[in-house]
Length: 212
Image 1: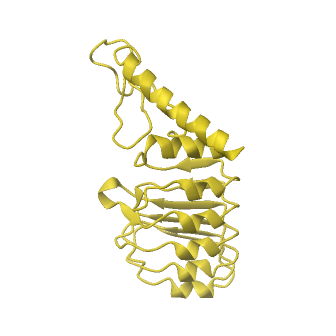
Image 2: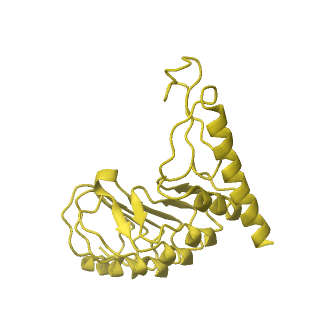
């Protein structure tokens, strides 16, 4: 199928992507849950690919090959926390300067660093788990000020129907960035929330000063 431009495989047991060489015009590729792919080298050979997403792979893989995919505007490595994908680093992604949408779902990295993502200056939306320090999120927010991401701000305010505060019964709790952080009620946890906001803003200001 040399003219194929889109391929969506929801439930699959794909182990090798070697056959993708037969679809050189592929622009959109989605691999759903249960895929057993261990190497992305054949994906990297698709020069026209613009959007690539993998959901809950059953085997871990490395992402070095993704750094070669210069045309990508959308990339998703998603899944549930019960099927987290652990990588060494986000470093290979720093080469994808054309990315506008990046969903890292339940991805954990051993070096615990978001620094490589600061190079993605075309990014518009970022989905990443709250698995990093407050300082990591704050520094990234300084480099990517226009990106939509829950954790690149001092706190995230959800709809009032979510996380109601059972203590005051009036307000509802907000999310705060940083691994191990808790939901806080602006009314009942005023001091803790203020301290969290100050910590985030100080780290962000330090990152901005360091970039000047």
